[in-house]
Structures are given as C-alpha cells and as structure tokens.
Length: 106
Length: 106
DNA sequence: AATTTGCGAAACTGATTGGTTGCGTATATA
DNA sequence: TATATACGCAACCAATCAGTTTCGCAAATT
Image 1: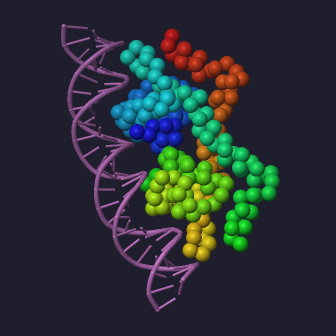
Image 2 (image 1 turned 90 degrees about the horizontal axis):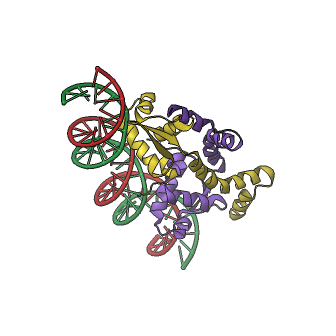
C-alpha cells in the first residue's frame, strides 16, 4: 500500500489537521471538535499520518496527544527543490524550456 | 470531486510524469515509453494534471505535447511556507512547541 | 465497585481510483 | 482514397478509501 507524505497531504482534512497540530499537540477529540466530523474519522486520518511518520503520539494518562513531526514536512520541500531550480532559473535568465518547445514547433 | 495540486502529486506515477516533462514537453506516447505503462494510463494521469492546471497542452499537428506549468508548483511551496517558519524558528531559537507540551505533561 | 470517558480496532458501505479495452476522430502517409 | 498513427473519451472492473457503527479496553471519576 502506498503510504507516503504525498499521499498523506492529498486529503484536505488531513492538511487541516496538520496545520492545527503544528503549533499545539492535540487529542483526537479536540481535533474533531475543530472540524465537523467525528472522533473516529479523525482517528483514521491520524493513523494514516502516523503510519507515514508525519505525526507522533504522546500518551498522557488515558489521553493521547498527537503532535506534528515537522521534520517530515521537509521531505516535501526536498522534492520541490528540483522545480525550484527551474523556476528560479526562469526568473533570472532566458526561458530555456520555452525555447526548446519553440524549436520543436519548427 | 477534489482535484487540486495536492491530489495530483499524491500518485507516484504522476510525480514521475511531472519530473519527466519539467524540462522537456512530451507526448503521451513518449511519456508512456519511459515507464512500464500504456498510453491510456498516462493519458488519464495527464487529464488529472491538466484539470488542476499543473500541465498544459500544445497541439502540434496530430501530436499533443504536454508541458509542466511550473508556476502551479509554487502553490505547494506556498502551503509549506507556514511550516518553514516553524522549522526555521526551531533551528534558531528555543523550541517553543516542546515547551508547551512539557507544560501539559506537568 | 460501578460508571463515565478517551481511545483503537474491526466490520461494513458507498464513493473514488488506477488501469484496461474499445470506439471515434483527426492528421499523416502510401 | 485507403491505411496507419496519435489521441481523447466512455465504459468497465478490481482495488482502495473515507466515513460510520459497533465493540472492547484502560484510565479516570463517582
């Protein structure tokens, strides 16, 4: 089963959860109250986020706090790196890609 | 139906296609030859990529070249911005988030 | 000790997805 | 003009997914 960071952030609810717990670890119930959804639904999202190591659990009595593994978010940034090179290059210099396409078009 | 950039890059094949056409516009057949898949499968991915405006078509006779809309990739970067602030802050200063959690733990 | 609360896990369901096959159309070539 | 090629689109199928319901367990409260 594919379960990586990109799969994790594909879902808007999961992105909202990530943003929510980025600054403050929270329990599934607390997260669910922020959206219009049930604890179980949130719990499922959290499981996916945990599986791909975007989120970490912290047991505190019978409560479980979920906190963002911010370092994992860097993976997305690293993947974007290759495109950043392209768009920065375009900003600074002649647009080589368009030139290539123009040539193909004769 | 949710069809945004994040949904688009969730699929590994689509990420590969994006990387492939980033520097060089290509036809569906040419793309398919790069992977072990059929033109139709690639075509479906391209349709999704087109729908969320990550990719643009360029008709050239009976061939259709697909080219990456690199500007759209910036949207992902913009979303990451909020987390970049956090991880840079952590690198430079005291880790406020962990402090908060520690406090919660008494 | 009994009840409530917070939670994960499993079972189920309807929606969505990725991929294949087949068809129709337009361009190129013979 | 007949054939081959490049392609999009629609139909189909098996796999997966998101969300709900139900259950059981463990910690907290009474």
